[in-house]
Image 1 (cartoon, rainbow, N blue to C red):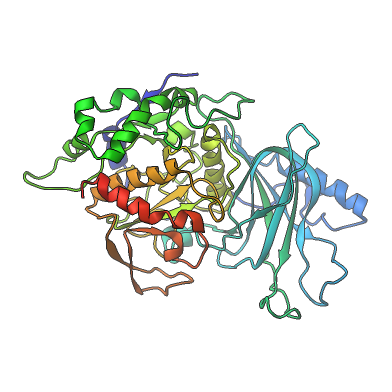
Image 2: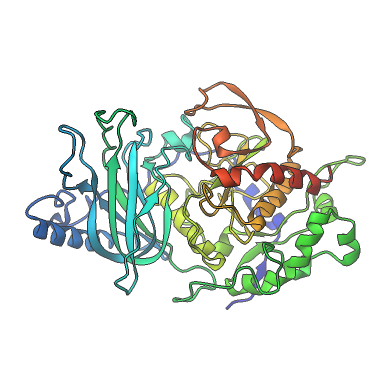
Length: 503
Protein backbone atom coordinates (compact mmCIF):
# COMPACT_ATOMS: atom_id res chain seq x y z
CA UNK A 1 0.00 0.00 0.00
CA UNK A 2 1.31 3.41 -0.77
CA UNK A 3 2.00 5.89 2.04
CA UNK A 4 -0.51 8.52 3.08
CA UNK A 5 -0.12 11.70 1.06
CA UNK A 6 -1.18 14.98 2.66
CA UNK A 7 -2.12 18.08 0.70
CA UNK A 8 -3.06 21.52 1.95
CA UNK A 9 -6.11 23.64 1.37
CA UNK A 10 -3.88 26.44 0.22
CA UNK A 11 -2.56 24.40 -2.69
CA UNK A 12 -6.04 23.18 -3.57
CA UNK A 13 -7.52 26.67 -3.62
CA UNK A 14 -4.60 28.17 -5.49
CA UNK A 15 -5.11 25.66 -8.25
CA UNK A 16 -8.83 26.42 -8.35
CA UNK A 17 -8.20 30.17 -8.68
CA UNK A 18 -6.32 29.68 -11.93
CA UNK A 19 -9.50 28.45 -13.62
CA UNK A 20 -12.56 30.41 -14.83
CA UNK A 21 -15.21 31.11 -12.19
CA UNK A 22 -18.20 31.14 -14.49
CA UNK A 23 -20.13 28.06 -15.49
CA UNK A 24 -19.38 27.45 -19.17
CA UNK A 25 -21.79 26.17 -21.76
CA UNK A 26 -21.27 22.47 -21.48
CA UNK A 27 -20.81 20.10 -24.28
CA UNK A 28 -23.17 17.15 -24.50
CA UNK A 29 -21.96 13.91 -22.95
CA UNK A 30 -20.98 10.93 -25.00
CA UNK A 31 -23.88 9.36 -26.91
CA UNK A 32 -26.00 7.21 -24.64
CA UNK A 33 -27.51 4.80 -27.07
CA UNK A 34 -26.78 1.55 -28.84
CA UNK A 35 -26.34 3.30 -32.19
CA UNK A 36 -22.62 2.52 -32.14
CA UNK A 37 -23.27 -1.20 -31.86
CA UNK A 38 -23.22 -3.72 -34.67
CA UNK A 39 -26.65 -4.30 -36.25
CA UNK A 40 -26.97 -7.67 -34.48
CA UNK A 41 -27.05 -5.91 -31.12
CA UNK A 42 -29.80 -3.42 -31.92
CA UNK A 43 -31.97 -2.47 -28.90
CA UNK A 44 -34.98 -3.53 -30.94
CA UNK A 45 -33.99 -7.17 -30.50
CA UNK A 46 -35.58 -7.68 -27.04
CA UNK A 47 -39.13 -8.85 -27.40
CA UNK A 48 -38.69 -10.33 -30.88
CA UNK A 49 -39.29 -14.04 -31.30
CA UNK A 50 -40.08 -16.80 -28.82
CA UNK A 51 -38.82 -16.59 -25.19
CA UNK A 52 -35.79 -18.81 -25.80
CA UNK A 53 -34.68 -16.64 -28.70
CA UNK A 54 -35.36 -13.45 -26.70
CA UNK A 55 -33.25 -14.68 -23.79
CA UNK A 56 -30.33 -15.56 -26.05
CA UNK A 57 -30.55 -12.26 -27.93
CA UNK A 58 -30.74 -10.11 -24.82
CA UNK A 59 -27.81 -11.95 -23.25
CA UNK A 60 -25.71 -11.29 -26.37
CA UNK A 61 -26.85 -7.67 -26.24
CA UNK A 62 -25.84 -7.31 -22.59
CA UNK A 63 -22.34 -8.56 -23.28
CA UNK A 64 -21.97 -6.48 -26.46
CA UNK A 65 -23.19 -3.28 -24.83
CA UNK A 66 -20.82 -3.80 -21.94
CA UNK A 67 -17.95 -3.34 -24.37
CA UNK A 68 -19.14 0.14 -25.38
CA UNK A 69 -16.62 2.18 -23.44
CA UNK A 70 -14.01 4.75 -24.35
CA UNK A 71 -10.36 3.83 -24.38
CA UNK A 72 -9.80 7.14 -22.57
CA UNK A 73 -11.59 5.77 -19.50
CA UNK A 74 -8.88 3.78 -17.68
CA UNK A 75 -10.92 2.96 -14.58
CA UNK A 76 -14.48 1.78 -14.35
CA UNK A 77 -17.14 1.23 -16.99
CA UNK A 78 -20.89 1.45 -17.57
CA UNK A 79 -23.12 -1.12 -19.24
CA UNK A 80 -26.32 0.52 -20.55
CA UNK A 81 -29.13 -1.92 -21.41
CA UNK A 82 -32.54 -0.92 -22.85
CA UNK A 83 -35.57 -2.24 -20.98
CA UNK A 84 -38.29 -4.15 -22.82
CA UNK A 85 -41.97 -4.95 -22.06
CA UNK A 86 -42.44 -7.90 -19.71
CA UNK A 87 -45.12 -10.56 -20.05
CA UNK A 88 -48.45 -9.18 -18.83
CA UNK A 89 -49.94 -10.69 -15.62
CA UNK A 90 -53.36 -12.36 -15.93
CA UNK A 91 -55.04 -9.63 -13.87
CA UNK A 92 -53.65 -6.72 -15.88
CA UNK A 93 -56.21 -4.01 -16.67
CA UNK A 94 -56.98 -3.81 -20.40
CA UNK A 95 -55.19 -0.91 -22.04
CA UNK A 96 -52.88 -0.33 -19.07
CA UNK A 97 -49.17 0.20 -19.82
CA UNK A 98 -47.05 -2.91 -19.53
CA UNK A 99 -44.32 -3.39 -16.97
CA UNK A 100 -40.81 -3.23 -18.35
CA UNK A 101 -37.59 -4.90 -17.39
CA UNK A 102 -34.96 -7.46 -18.27
CA UNK A 103 -34.93 -11.20 -17.53
CA UNK A 104 -32.04 -12.81 -15.72
CA UNK A 105 -28.85 -12.48 -17.70
CA UNK A 106 -25.09 -12.49 -17.42
CA UNK A 107 -23.16 -9.23 -17.44
CA UNK A 108 -19.64 -8.04 -17.02
CA UNK A 109 -18.78 -7.29 -13.37
CA UNK A 110 -20.54 -4.27 -11.84
CA UNK A 111 -21.28 -3.00 -8.33
CA UNK A 112 -24.00 -0.36 -8.68
CA UNK A 113 -27.28 -0.26 -10.60
CA UNK A 114 -29.84 2.36 -11.59
CA UNK A 115 -32.47 3.09 -14.24
CA UNK A 116 -32.42 6.17 -16.48
CA UNK A 117 -34.82 7.52 -19.14
CA UNK A 118 -34.82 10.13 -21.88
CA UNK A 119 -36.77 13.08 -20.43
CA UNK A 120 -35.21 14.52 -17.26
CA UNK A 121 -38.51 16.21 -16.36
CA UNK A 122 -40.62 13.06 -16.76
CA UNK A 123 -41.42 11.33 -13.47
CA UNK A 124 -41.35 7.60 -12.99
CA UNK A 125 -44.60 6.68 -11.22
CA UNK A 126 -43.96 3.08 -10.38
CA UNK A 127 -41.70 0.64 -8.58
CA UNK A 128 -38.23 -0.45 -9.62
CA UNK A 129 -36.78 -3.69 -8.27
CA UNK A 130 -33.56 -5.55 -9.06
CA UNK A 131 -31.96 -8.90 -8.27
CA UNK A 132 -28.25 -9.49 -8.73
CA UNK A 133 -25.88 -12.44 -8.68
CA UNK A 134 -22.62 -12.25 -6.76
CA UNK A 135 -19.62 -12.49 -9.10
CA UNK A 136 -18.36 -16.01 -9.66
CA UNK A 137 -21.24 -17.66 -7.80
CA UNK A 138 -24.75 -18.96 -8.44
CA UNK A 139 -26.20 -16.95 -5.53
CA UNK A 140 -28.94 -14.49 -6.44
CA UNK A 141 -30.02 -11.79 -4.03
CA UNK A 142 -33.61 -11.16 -3.01
CA UNK A 143 -35.51 -8.47 -4.90
CA UNK A 144 -34.28 -5.04 -3.80
CA UNK A 145 -36.19 -1.77 -4.17
CA UNK A 146 -34.55 1.10 -6.04
CA UNK A 147 -35.64 4.56 -4.96
CA UNK A 148 -37.40 6.20 -7.91
CA UNK A 149 -35.80 9.58 -7.16
CA UNK A 150 -37.79 11.62 -9.73
CA UNK A 151 -35.48 14.57 -10.43
CA UNK A 152 -35.19 15.69 -6.82
CA UNK A 153 -31.39 15.61 -7.03
CA UNK A 154 -30.49 17.60 -10.13
CA UNK A 155 -29.26 20.90 -11.49
CA UNK A 156 -31.78 23.74 -11.27
CA UNK A 157 -34.14 24.39 -14.17
CA UNK A 158 -32.74 27.00 -16.54
CA UNK A 159 -29.15 26.52 -15.32
CA UNK A 160 -26.29 25.97 -17.75
CA UNK A 161 -25.81 22.45 -16.42
CA UNK A 162 -29.47 21.60 -17.02
CA UNK A 163 -29.96 23.34 -20.37
CA UNK A 164 -26.53 22.86 -21.94
CA UNK A 165 -26.33 19.09 -21.59
CA UNK A 166 -28.29 15.96 -22.45
CA UNK A 167 -29.62 15.39 -18.94
CA UNK A 168 -31.73 12.30 -18.24
CA UNK A 169 -34.28 11.26 -15.68
CA UNK A 170 -32.89 8.72 -13.24
CA UNK A 171 -33.64 6.62 -10.19
CA UNK A 172 -31.33 6.73 -7.21
CA UNK A 173 -28.34 4.42 -7.71
CA UNK A 174 -28.21 1.24 -5.61
CA UNK A 175 -24.96 -0.33 -4.40
CA UNK A 176 -25.19 -4.11 -4.85
CA UNK A 177 -21.55 -5.16 -4.48
CA UNK A 178 -19.45 -7.13 -6.95
CA UNK A 179 -21.96 -8.81 -9.30
CA UNK A 180 -22.05 -10.41 -12.74
CA UNK A 181 -25.75 -11.22 -13.18
CA UNK A 182 -28.88 -9.04 -13.06
CA UNK A 183 -32.65 -9.04 -13.39
CA UNK A 184 -34.87 -5.94 -13.24
CA UNK A 185 -38.58 -5.14 -13.30
CA UNK A 186 -40.30 -1.73 -13.44
CA UNK A 187 -44.01 -1.72 -12.74
CA UNK A 188 -46.27 1.31 -13.34
CA UNK A 189 -48.50 2.42 -10.47
CA UNK A 190 -52.07 3.75 -10.55
CA UNK A 191 -52.72 7.50 -10.39
CA UNK A 192 -55.02 7.01 -7.41
CA UNK A 193 -53.99 4.23 -5.05
CA UNK A 194 -57.52 4.21 -3.59
CA UNK A 195 -59.13 3.49 -6.94
CA UNK A 196 -58.47 -0.11 -8.00
CA UNK A 197 -59.80 0.63 -11.48
CA UNK A 198 -57.49 3.60 -12.02
CA UNK A 199 -55.30 3.40 -15.10
CA UNK A 200 -51.56 3.20 -14.30
CA UNK A 201 -49.42 6.14 -15.37
CA UNK A 202 -47.34 5.32 -18.47
CA UNK A 203 -43.69 4.68 -17.75
CA UNK A 204 -41.13 7.19 -19.12
CA UNK A 205 -39.78 6.56 -22.59
CA UNK A 206 -36.30 5.27 -23.27
CA UNK A 207 -35.73 3.47 -19.98
CA UNK A 208 -32.36 1.79 -19.65
CA UNK A 209 -30.65 -0.21 -16.93
CA UNK A 210 -27.24 1.14 -15.96
CA UNK A 211 -24.67 -1.27 -14.52
CA UNK A 212 -21.68 0.60 -13.10
CA UNK A 213 -18.24 -0.81 -12.39
CA UNK A 214 -16.28 1.67 -10.20
CA UNK A 215 -12.89 0.32 -11.22
CA UNK A 216 -9.94 0.24 -8.85
CA UNK A 217 -9.05 3.21 -6.70
CA UNK A 218 -5.92 4.42 -4.87
CA UNK A 219 -4.27 1.63 -2.92
CA UNK A 220 -6.91 -0.97 -3.80
CA UNK A 221 -6.06 -4.52 -4.76
CA UNK A 222 -8.43 -6.86 -6.60
CA UNK A 223 -10.28 -9.05 -4.14
CA UNK A 224 -9.99 -6.69 -1.18
CA UNK A 225 -13.56 -5.85 -0.27
CA UNK A 226 -13.76 -5.26 3.45
CA UNK A 227 -12.00 -3.81 6.47
CA UNK A 228 -12.67 -3.60 10.20
CA UNK A 229 -15.25 -0.95 11.11
CA UNK A 230 -14.51 1.30 12.86
CA UNK A 231 -10.72 1.24 13.03
CA UNK A 232 -9.17 -0.88 15.73
CA UNK A 233 -8.95 0.96 19.03
CA UNK A 234 -11.41 3.69 18.05
CA UNK A 235 -14.39 4.20 20.38
CA UNK A 236 -17.68 2.83 19.04
CA UNK A 237 -19.23 5.28 16.59
CA UNK A 238 -16.08 7.42 16.50
CA UNK A 239 -13.82 7.52 13.46
CA UNK A 240 -12.27 10.71 12.13
CA UNK A 241 -10.17 11.03 8.99
CA UNK A 242 -7.48 13.11 10.72
CA UNK A 243 -3.78 12.26 10.34
CA UNK A 244 -2.06 11.97 13.73
CA UNK A 245 0.59 14.53 12.86
CA UNK A 246 -2.15 17.16 12.65
CA UNK A 247 -3.89 16.22 15.91
CA UNK A 248 -3.76 18.96 18.56
CA UNK A 249 -1.38 18.89 21.48
CA UNK A 250 -3.02 18.27 24.87
CA UNK A 251 -2.73 21.96 25.75
CA UNK A 252 -4.48 23.04 22.55
CA UNK A 253 -7.10 20.34 22.73
CA UNK A 254 -8.05 21.29 26.28
CA UNK A 255 -9.17 24.71 25.09
CA UNK A 256 -11.43 23.29 22.39
CA UNK A 257 -15.09 22.28 22.69
CA UNK A 258 -15.63 18.91 24.35
CA UNK A 259 -17.03 17.31 21.22
CA UNK A 260 -13.87 18.15 19.24
CA UNK A 261 -11.59 16.87 21.99
CA UNK A 262 -13.33 13.49 21.79
CA UNK A 263 -12.84 13.37 18.04
CA UNK A 264 -9.15 14.21 18.34
CA UNK A 265 -8.70 11.36 20.82
CA UNK A 266 -10.06 8.94 18.21
CA UNK A 267 -8.21 10.42 15.23
CA UNK A 268 -4.91 8.53 15.45
CA UNK A 269 -6.73 5.19 15.54
CA UNK A 270 -7.90 5.50 11.95
CA UNK A 271 -4.61 6.50 10.36
CA UNK A 272 -3.66 2.93 9.49
CA UNK A 273 -7.00 2.36 7.76
CA UNK A 274 -6.62 5.57 5.74
CA UNK A 275 -3.11 4.60 4.71
CA UNK A 276 -4.37 1.20 3.58
CA UNK A 277 -6.73 2.74 1.04
CA UNK A 278 -4.14 5.29 -0.07
CA UNK A 279 -6.31 8.23 1.01
CA UNK A 280 -5.14 11.70 0.11
CA UNK A 281 -6.31 13.97 2.91
CA UNK A 282 -6.70 17.70 3.39
CA UNK A 283 -5.48 17.81 7.00
CA UNK A 284 -7.57 18.73 10.00
CA UNK A 285 -6.69 21.92 11.88
CA UNK A 286 -7.45 23.10 15.37
CA UNK A 287 -9.88 26.00 15.73
CA UNK A 288 -6.96 28.35 16.39
CA UNK A 289 -5.12 27.16 13.28
CA UNK A 290 -8.32 27.41 11.26
CA UNK A 291 -8.90 31.03 12.31
CA UNK A 292 -5.26 31.89 11.65
CA UNK A 293 -5.51 30.47 8.14
CA UNK A 294 -8.45 32.75 7.33
CA UNK A 295 -6.46 36.03 7.71
CA UNK A 296 -9.33 37.70 9.56
CA UNK A 297 -9.58 41.42 10.23
CA UNK A 298 -8.11 42.58 13.57
CA UNK A 299 -10.66 42.46 16.36
CA UNK A 300 -13.06 40.25 14.42
CA UNK A 301 -14.87 37.55 16.40
CA UNK A 302 -15.64 34.86 13.86
CA UNK A 303 -17.55 31.70 14.54
CA UNK A 304 -15.72 29.14 12.47
CA UNK A 305 -15.37 25.53 13.50
CA UNK A 306 -12.07 23.62 13.24
CA UNK A 307 -11.38 22.35 9.76
CA UNK A 308 -12.02 18.59 9.68
CA UNK A 309 -9.90 16.14 7.75
CA UNK A 310 -11.29 15.74 4.21
CA UNK A 311 -10.43 12.92 1.83
CA UNK A 312 -9.89 14.57 -1.55
CA UNK A 313 -11.21 13.51 -4.93
CA UNK A 314 -7.74 12.10 -5.63
CA UNK A 315 -8.03 10.21 -2.37
CA UNK A 316 -11.20 8.36 -3.40
CA UNK A 317 -10.02 7.89 -6.96
CA UNK A 318 -12.18 10.31 -8.99
CA UNK A 319 -11.36 10.08 -12.70
CA UNK A 320 -11.05 13.77 -13.58
CA UNK A 321 -11.44 12.97 -17.28
CA UNK A 322 -15.11 12.13 -16.73
CA UNK A 323 -16.28 15.52 -15.49
CA UNK A 324 -16.60 18.81 -17.29
CA UNK A 325 -13.26 20.61 -17.28
CA UNK A 326 -14.23 23.93 -15.70
CA UNK A 327 -16.14 24.77 -12.52
CA UNK A 328 -19.32 26.61 -11.59
CA UNK A 329 -19.71 28.77 -8.49
CA UNK A 330 -22.39 30.56 -6.48
CA UNK A 331 -21.79 33.89 -4.72
CA UNK A 332 -21.87 32.46 -1.19
CA UNK A 333 -23.02 29.53 0.95
CA UNK A 334 -26.14 30.37 2.94
CA UNK A 335 -27.26 26.89 3.93
CA UNK A 336 -26.40 23.20 3.89
CA UNK A 337 -28.82 20.53 2.66
CA UNK A 338 -28.31 17.09 4.15
CA UNK A 339 -29.13 14.03 2.02
CA UNK A 340 -28.79 10.30 2.14
CA UNK A 341 -27.45 8.69 -1.02
CA UNK A 342 -30.21 6.02 -0.96
CA UNK A 343 -27.62 3.53 -2.21
CA UNK A 344 -28.30 1.10 0.64
CA UNK A 345 -26.26 0.25 3.73
CA UNK A 346 -24.50 -2.88 2.46
CA UNK A 347 -21.07 -1.35 2.12
CA UNK A 348 -18.00 -1.30 4.33
CA UNK A 349 -16.12 1.92 5.01
CA UNK A 350 -13.21 0.56 3.01
CA UNK A 351 -15.62 0.26 0.08
CA UNK A 352 -16.84 3.85 0.45
CA UNK A 353 -14.39 5.19 -2.19
CA UNK A 354 -15.75 2.60 -4.63
CA UNK A 355 -19.31 3.67 -3.82
CA UNK A 356 -18.32 7.27 -4.52
CA UNK A 357 -16.67 6.41 -7.83
CA UNK A 358 -19.80 4.52 -8.84
CA UNK A 359 -22.14 7.39 -7.93
CA UNK A 360 -19.82 9.81 -9.73
CA UNK A 361 -19.91 7.75 -12.93
CA UNK A 362 -23.70 7.34 -12.62
CA UNK A 363 -24.18 11.10 -12.22
CA UNK A 364 -21.96 12.01 -15.17
CA UNK A 365 -22.19 9.16 -17.70
CA UNK A 366 -25.70 7.90 -16.98
CA UNK A 367 -27.58 11.03 -15.80
CA UNK A 368 -25.67 13.55 -17.92
CA UNK A 369 -24.53 15.88 -15.11
CA UNK A 370 -21.32 17.86 -15.32
CA UNK A 371 -19.80 16.28 -12.21
CA UNK A 372 -20.61 14.49 -8.95
CA UNK A 373 -23.82 16.08 -7.67
CA UNK A 374 -23.05 16.64 -3.97
CA UNK A 375 -20.42 19.02 -2.60
CA UNK A 376 -19.39 16.58 0.12
CA UNK A 377 -20.06 13.00 1.19
CA UNK A 378 -19.83 11.28 4.56
CA UNK A 379 -19.55 7.52 5.11
CA UNK A 380 -20.90 5.42 7.99
CA UNK A 381 -17.56 5.66 9.86
CA UNK A 382 -17.63 9.46 9.78
CA UNK A 383 -15.01 9.99 7.08
CA UNK A 384 -15.61 13.16 5.06
CA UNK A 385 -15.01 13.26 1.30
CA UNK A 386 -14.66 16.09 -1.21
CA UNK A 387 -17.49 15.79 -3.72
CA UNK A 388 -17.98 18.13 -6.68
CA UNK A 389 -14.70 19.65 -7.85
CA UNK A 390 -13.86 23.32 -7.52
CA UNK A 391 -12.25 23.75 -4.10
CA UNK A 392 -13.53 22.72 -0.68
CA UNK A 393 -13.46 26.29 0.65
CA UNK A 394 -15.34 27.70 -2.34
CA UNK A 395 -19.06 28.19 -2.98
CA UNK A 396 -19.17 25.44 -5.62
CA UNK A 397 -22.50 25.16 -7.43
CA UNK A 398 -23.81 21.62 -7.02
CA UNK A 399 -26.70 19.52 -8.34
CA UNK A 400 -28.10 18.17 -5.10
CA UNK A 401 -31.39 19.94 -4.28
CA UNK A 402 -33.53 20.85 -7.28
CA UNK A 403 -34.60 24.48 -6.91
CA UNK A 404 -32.11 25.31 -4.16
CA UNK A 405 -28.63 24.59 -5.51
CA UNK A 406 -27.67 28.27 -5.74
CA UNK A 407 -25.84 29.62 -2.66
CA UNK A 408 -26.08 26.31 -0.79
CA UNK A 409 -24.02 23.17 -0.27
CA UNK A 410 -25.11 19.53 -0.41
CA UNK A 411 -23.87 16.80 1.93
CA UNK A 412 -24.70 13.17 1.16
CA UNK A 413 -24.47 10.59 3.94
CA UNK A 414 -23.75 7.31 2.16
CA UNK A 415 -26.56 4.86 2.88
CA UNK A 416 -30.34 4.68 3.25
CA UNK A 417 -31.86 6.04 6.45
CA UNK A 418 -35.61 5.78 6.08
CA UNK A 419 -35.86 2.92 8.59
CA UNK A 420 -32.24 2.61 9.75
CA UNK A 421 -30.62 4.97 12.24
CA UNK A 422 -27.56 6.79 10.90
CA UNK A 423 -24.33 5.96 12.78
CA UNK A 424 -23.33 8.52 15.41
CA UNK A 425 -20.00 8.98 13.61
CA UNK A 426 -21.79 10.11 10.44
CA UNK A 427 -23.94 12.65 12.29
CA UNK A 428 -20.85 13.97 14.09
CA UNK A 429 -19.07 14.33 10.77
CA UNK A 430 -21.96 16.42 9.41
CA UNK A 431 -21.64 18.65 12.50
CA UNK A 432 -17.89 19.08 12.03
CA UNK A 433 -18.16 19.77 8.31
CA UNK A 434 -20.96 22.33 8.64
CA UNK A 435 -19.31 24.08 11.61
CA UNK A 436 -16.29 24.75 9.44
CA UNK A 437 -17.74 25.33 5.97
CA UNK A 438 -20.78 27.39 7.06
CA UNK A 439 -18.51 29.30 9.41
CA UNK A 440 -16.34 30.40 6.48
CA UNK A 441 -19.41 32.24 5.18
CA UNK A 442 -20.59 33.62 8.53
CA UNK A 443 -23.56 31.28 9.01
CA UNK A 444 -25.01 30.16 12.34
CA UNK A 445 -25.85 26.43 12.17
CA UNK A 446 -28.76 26.96 14.57
CA UNK A 447 -30.10 29.93 12.63
CA UNK A 448 -32.59 30.54 9.84
CA UNK A 449 -31.99 31.85 6.34
CA UNK A 450 -34.19 32.98 3.45
CA UNK A 451 -33.62 31.25 0.12
CA UNK A 452 -35.24 31.94 -3.25
CA UNK A 453 -36.60 28.86 -4.99
CA UNK A 454 -35.46 28.10 -8.49
CA UNK A 455 -38.52 25.88 -8.93
CA UNK A 456 -39.33 22.50 -7.37
CA UNK A 457 -42.37 20.33 -6.72
CA UNK A 458 -42.74 22.07 -3.35
CA UNK A 459 -42.03 25.73 -4.14
CA UNK A 460 -42.57 27.63 -7.38
CA UNK A 461 -39.70 29.55 -8.92
CA UNK A 462 -39.17 32.93 -7.29
CA UNK A 463 -40.83 32.04 -3.98
CA UNK A 464 -38.87 33.16 -0.90
CA UNK A 465 -38.58 30.37 1.66
CA UNK A 466 -37.32 30.65 5.24
CA UNK A 467 -35.36 27.54 6.18
CA UNK A 468 -32.91 26.24 8.76
CA UNK A 469 -29.29 26.94 7.88
CA UNK A 470 -28.84 23.17 8.18
CA UNK A 471 -31.85 21.68 6.42
CA UNK A 472 -32.86 18.30 5.12
CA UNK A 473 -33.50 17.73 1.42
CA UNK A 474 -37.23 17.34 2.12
CA UNK A 475 -37.36 20.96 3.34
CA UNK A 476 -36.90 22.16 -0.23
CA UNK A 477 -38.45 19.31 -2.22
CA UNK A 478 -41.32 16.88 -1.58
CA UNK A 479 -39.21 13.78 -0.99
CA UNK A 480 -38.37 11.22 1.68
CA UNK A 481 -34.69 12.24 1.51
CA UNK A 482 -32.63 12.28 3.73
CA UNK A 483 -34.70 9.50 5.27
CA UNK A 484 -36.85 9.90 8.39
CA UNK A 485 -34.19 8.57 10.77
CA UNK A 486 -31.43 10.89 9.52
CA UNK A 487 -33.81 13.86 9.35
CA UNK A 488 -34.57 13.43 13.06
CA UNK A 489 -30.86 13.80 13.84
CA UNK A 490 -30.50 17.21 12.22
CA UNK A 491 -31.43 19.05 15.42
CA UNK A 492 -28.52 17.39 17.19
CA UNK A 493 -26.25 18.20 14.25
CA UNK A 494 -27.22 21.89 14.42
CA UNK A 495 -26.48 22.08 18.14
CA UNK A 496 -23.14 20.31 17.87
CA UNK A 497 -22.14 22.36 14.83
CA UNK A 498 -22.86 25.64 16.63
CA UNK A 499 -20.88 24.43 19.67
CA UNK A 500 -17.91 23.65 17.45
CA UNK A 501 -18.11 27.22 16.15
CA UNK A 502 -17.79 28.49 19.72
CA UNK A 503 -21.38 29.74 19.97
